[in-house]
Image (cartoon, rainbow, N blue to C red; front, side, top):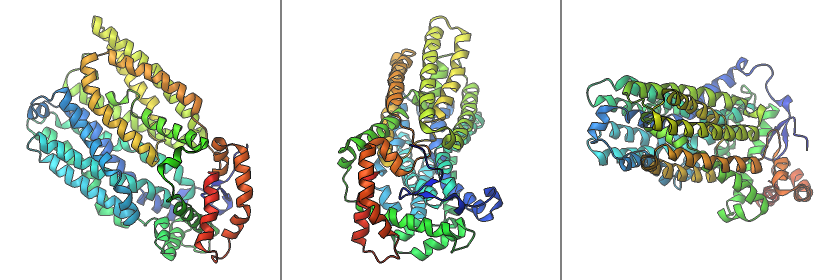
Length: 512
């Protein structure tokens, strides 16, 4: 089936390119202003990225280790996992905040909680206070992380949605870079401020968001869902058409949002079990849950949160060298992930996932071999090779598993995997040493087979075309015939009743 040349819409129809701006987007001041404002929700990833890199760095800071009486592997696992446990606990609550109070308020609530957690973490007096503050940071981060991607996708200019949502995940490394280079600079301070300063800076993104989130436009979809249609149209006109409310793009987007809201109203009656009832849905969930688990259980957790132990294992033990490697790795990850997020629509998702998983497998096999060689004969060459492949492994991970994640069901699998990963990694690594790398090497073989068999390419396809990949052409053709008349009715001047719209969307939901 040939892909559409237009942009797939919520209703499955394609957006006529003639409706879009002409020339370069940066020549249109309203789009430039919108993209600058969207930096505010984009930096939500900062706090999460900051955390992983900061904990990597703090494990190399002597004053931090001494203050907490040289944490055991179990303590390190708790220090890292508690942030993810806090995030996991907020998942059932956070959607109600962003849906009930609005996307902007969802970001503000999350930023406020994270800021309080960062203040308490900076002022930590004992182990319990440190653990509690990190739980609070994780708890608050989820509120902002639920609202921010929604606001980005619902406000962004149509052709910018895919790269901006991919960039959102990639900006995890913006916080990672700040944390890594902060600990590189502060470990030399001969006081507790060597680790309190990085802890304080974890709240930097929250301060920025609390100051500037109010300048953001609210989500047009959220406004329409609240019966504030004229406000939504005004926002769409201002930021997508330079203030021209009669522009055809505005009526198109408005109608698409109305259709999507009707679809969501019908979907609200659907239980989680419906995600697994049909063969097509089971194929979807196989991909969603598998990718979510793989994003955290591919061996990346050791490097992301316990790089210090990896470097100790190859003779790089000084705080200066360890924090320097952490800082360079953060910049490298940011460059690769951002580049991948900008090219995903041209290359496609399936090629990225296959190349990423195969590359990680080869890299981890070499890391395993070099770690074993170094432990046996202290070979400097083996240690340097291992360090090089830490970077190569991260590069392959970054091209797919950083920019291409999303969806609520995937978030559950991601967070569950993170908690397991963060707590068990230091304990198992201490017990098995280099042999622990072998466990992940074998697991990556399974991942590669899984991705090769079931990762489905959806680049350039409308929702109906995508549905055909999972549900089969015959089912889609039959349901399309059933909905053809109803789709025409939906375009009328609004005289249709809500029940009729829900019936239309019920059939559309079966297609997709």
